[in-house]
Image (cartoon, rainbow, N blue to C red):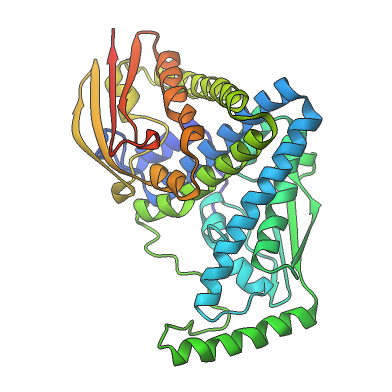
Length: 385
C-alpha cells in the first residue's frame, strides 16, 4: 500500500497539481475521484470540528457531547436505514458481511482513498477492521475538542449498524481520538441472527424474482462502485457524509436550543471555519509565490470542481473578478433531501465571505441567489475592491 499522505490543503493541492492542471467548469482545478474524496473528507471533518468547538465554548463540554451523540445516532440510523433498504431491494441478507460491503460510502472506497488497511476478517456474522492513520484525525487532531472527536467515532459505527440490522453490535478496542495508536472496529452478530438474516433474504429473493425485480448475483455482493475514475461519481457518493452529518447535528441543536440560538452558533462556527480555510490557502499560495488575487483563489480553491456533480454556467474569471451561476449542485440536492433549509445557509453566507477575506482582505463575496434559500439557481460574485 502506498505511503499515507495527510489530508491537508497543501498535500491535496500538491497531489492535484502533479496529475492535472485542467480547470473545471467553475474555475477550480478539475479534481480526480481520489482528490474529490480527500477534499470532501477534510471539509467534513474540519466543519464538524469548528461546530464542535463553538458548541463546547457556548454550552460546555458535557452538554455539547450529549447533543453530538444524539445527533450522530440519528445520522447513523438514517444511513444504516438507507443501506438496509438498498440491500433488501437486491435480495441480500442483512448481515455483517453485507454491512461492510454496502457501507455508506463503501468500506472499499474509504480504504482505497485513505491509505488505511482492509478488513482483517470478514464473515457473515463477524468483521474486524484496523485503521492507522485515519484521514478524519488530520482535522480532528488539531481542531476538535478531544471528547467530541471520541463521541463521533464511538457513536457513528454502532448507529449505522443498528440502522442496518438491530442484531449487529459494534465495539472499539482502540480509537485514535482516545490517544491510542490506531482505530479498531469489530462488527459482530450472533451466528443464529446471521442465519435468520439469510433465511429472510432467501424468502425476499423469491418475492423479487416473482415480481421480475433485479437480484444480486451473489448473496454477499459488494456494493457497485461505478466508475472509480469519475470525480462526479465519487463526489456524489461521498458528499452525503458531510451534508447529512452537518444536518443531523444542526437538527439536534435546534431541538435543544431553538432556531435562533442554533443559527447564531452555526454562523459563528462557519465564520471561524471559513477564516481557517482562507488562511491555509493564503499561506500555501504565498509559499508558492503565487499572486493573492481572485483568479488564484478560485482556481486553487480547497474543494475542486467535480464534473457532473454540479453544473456552472455564465462563468467569468480574471485576476480581480469571478462570477458563476450554478444550476445543479450535489450539496443543494443532499440538503434538500433531509430538509436542512436555513441551517445550511451559514456554510455559504458566512463561511465563504470569511474564507475570501482571510485569503486577502480586499476580496469580497456576494451571493445573489442560493438554492439553499429556495432559489432555482445559486449565483456567486467575487471581486477585489
